[in-house]
Image 1 (cartoon, rainbow, N blue to C red):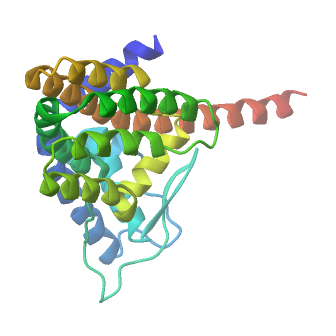
Image 2 (image 1 turned 30 degrees about the vertical axis):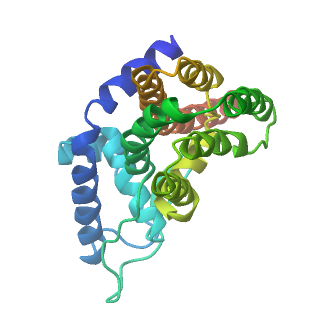
Length: 263
């Protein structure tokens, strides 16, 4: 049941990602104006996600992206199980600012790394293919650790970039991975994903390695793009799962409160 909910939410939301970038920025700007105009005081709770989504006629993932943009600027604080609260009001020196988001970053990777995989299929050698298989095993090992890193995931994608024999592609893919942690908005959403136990999917990486072994550019491109589309869906699920976790914690507190009253 949880898996089907995940698939429905992620697939439906992923289909709207092309327009979500503009929508979340527009909503973030509107909320920024509300804060600047004194609609909400410091310490006040912003309306619930579902109310903001209905009021502004946007999806709930769009609301989450807008809140993240404000959270990165230190204007709001998201408290698990409670909601988003005003941390400070914008000053004269503030303006709505946006970093590269995790969604934007993954869309760029989908375009660039898909073609990189196609080119790598032509040039990759047997030693590199064996190294990719070893990296898939490392990804599986890292997933078993509670505080594991995602170094093997990064190394896997950078090896494919190097196999293109194109320095410009290598530099571009390295920069995309650097942005994952250097862009505050991207880093924040990936942190939320880790909290939701989202980890690199071993079978997706194994499928890419198998496709590259065929030396077929089309198969390699398809496998890489399928993987990165799934990453987009996992990120959407992570934000959905966090919202559900907050609701579960609030419900649990309510049950405990009533239990004390009845005892």
